[in-house]
Structure formats: C-alpha cells, structure tokens
Image (cartoon, rainbow, N blue to C red; front, side, top):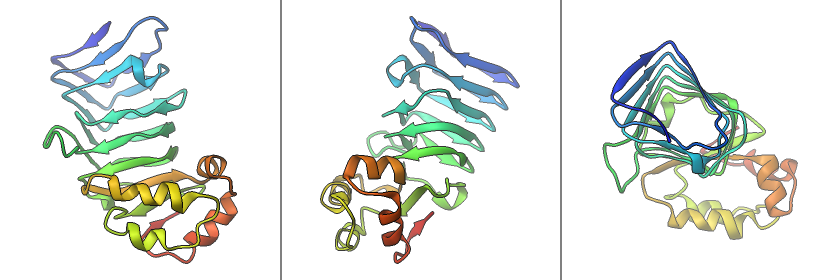
Length: 199
C-alpha cells in the first residue's frame, strides 16, 4: 500500500499509477494546488478524511463507482471520465464530505450523484452530459415523461430509492443511450421540454 497522510502537500504532481499497489490518501491529508493523476481503478484507491483544495483531478481511465464520501472538495477541476460516482455529503456520514466551487466542464460524468451540496456553486459538464436537479422529490414527474428506451422504467424510477439529500444526478447521454436502447438525440428531445435540467 502507498499512503499519503497527516500532511499538507502544495503545488505537487501526484501520479497514482502502480499496477500492484493500493493508494490510500488520508487520514488528515490536505492537497492544495496539486495535480492528482489517477491511472488506477476505484478498487485500488481509498481517499479518506482528506481535503482537496484548488486541485486538478485527472483520471486516465474511467473511474467507476467511486464514493467521494470522506473527502472535502473545494475549487477543484475534474478531467476524464467518471461513472457511478457520489460527490458530497453522504447521509450515513454527515460532515465528513463536501463539494463546492468545483469545475466538471472538462469531464464526462455518467450516472453520478451530487449529495448534500449547493449545486449552484459547481460548473457542470455540458451536452452530451446532462444534469437533472432535485431528482428524488421530482421522480414521479420525471417518470411520467415519454422517455425513450427503458430510461423511465429503470433510471427514473430508481430515483425514488436515492437518498433525499441527492440534489442532482448527471448522465452522459451517449452512455445512457447505449445502456437503455435509445439514442442521445431521443434523450435530448425530452430534455428540451423539461425544467430543472442543465445540458
């Protein structure tokens, strides 16, 4: 295991690329103005009780199903592909994570949730990604829309089971279309008639 903990690192490049080691960032780690290059899968990455401030986080392979639930993210820029990630404060561990002022405009984000945060402080990715705001409260309204493929039956219905603190969910239209038997254009046709969406 390669561990960074109990320190503040400023203006450094950290490349996580070992094929044989697990990287552990934390506890009590602060990265400021650093570039974090992640080349390992989520199973080989643990970030706990860590602050990332004004950092660039660049993933070189799809970072799948990673939970940023013990990380405070402030003013960070994300690059690369993120799928099934959770950003922000988890209901099961209040106060241990946050996200504010971060920029996802250079990232592809799919099936990822933003929890317990002010999403207005974030710069979200534009089309072909899209973000649905307040999906848990609005799931019935969203379910009633004429979604193509089986998006309504599978994805939107699932919003009812998400934590109430879920303030937004972001999808990649091409990835969602591939999984749900439709096209990005058909998804966009529904989004264009919808309030509470960013694309």
